[in-house]
Length: 508
Image 1 (cartoon, helix red, strand yellow):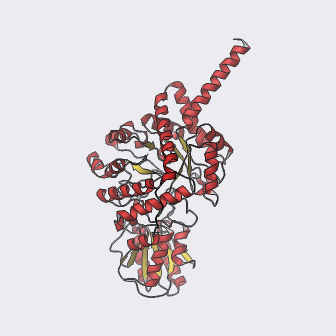
Image 2 (image 1 turned 180 degrees about the vertical axis):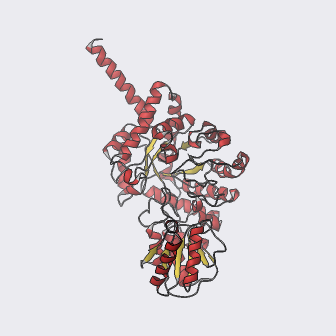
């Protein structure tokens, strides 16, 4: 081969690689470090990257400017925010959510309030230059032990969840923002967190069809723009997790959904520790997914690489390019997926400017109406707060300090985690906390007294040692606790503030 022929071959090979990388970019949705556009991300956006997902590390006072920088590199970029309100917030990660959560809205069962909350969420997302909300949660939380859904769901009844999912979708999308219902085909009957392992659903498929698929069918009928998959296995439908299972994702298309199927994060252990981010991305596309959410590069914690964001992106991109090159992944499948993503981006560019006018929103009023009190609250002074919630998870920062701080109004608090204490340690910790309270009423902040025997026992020990104990429950409702309970239903700032209002105001 002559030098000229070699150069031509090299140019052809380079052009082919560039084309395959652009095809792959069109279906990739990474997270990233920082509050400015990193060089690798700017380059990828200029070469057709579908967009980005914002997580807490990206949120700052110049978020709208960050969004503008992303769109300067790619005007069609989709910018998503993992924002649900209530216990899950990115936009208010530093201070806690001021939006009602799903369980609060479900307990209130006022679809107008849910639609208004969706519209307010869209307004906030639009104000920072983003255009996709990774919500609402459409899971029916039928297993009270569920470690990852719980109060993120509207409830445990399929009809209730369905009507509130529709209201939330309509509220969000009227605001010129795409809604993405999650986690198909339903993550509500699990007691394993897919961030850490691969859940298996041992439920009759007929029950899944009747209960867990119902809210997704309702969302599709309401015109939802996107659906997020779940990393769960339903053995009756195959051994692959739903995200990688063509039979499961095919159910969405059979139901008439022609929008964007988005994967749950590929960096979750259910995928990363089995087939890997790259293999998972290829299999998800082959199964029918359209947009690959790569995930939050901060999730590995101390094990995260300095370039974890770029590393994960390149792992996914290069695996797709290799699969396209060797024919493992059909080119037409990736073209089809990229076209769906592009259609959504074009739709949002047209509709955001014509979004519904923002109406007055009374979030505190909605949360105040949703709060429930079991028992009596006596008119005493400010409480001494003991935070006895579980440790945080990757999905929900359940033990975030802003909840206890808001409940205590800035006063000192004590943190106890019953899961980390044996019986003797627990007794000593309770004695110390009661002594520190100095006779004041104790507000015991809990989130799992419905199913966690250790947390429930902690309530009993405080009740036996203190003059008055009130449980402030930010988890699922619980009966027969033995003390008065304020059912908040969300680990949020607004929930804690209004629980304190109840305590100080002594509402029966």
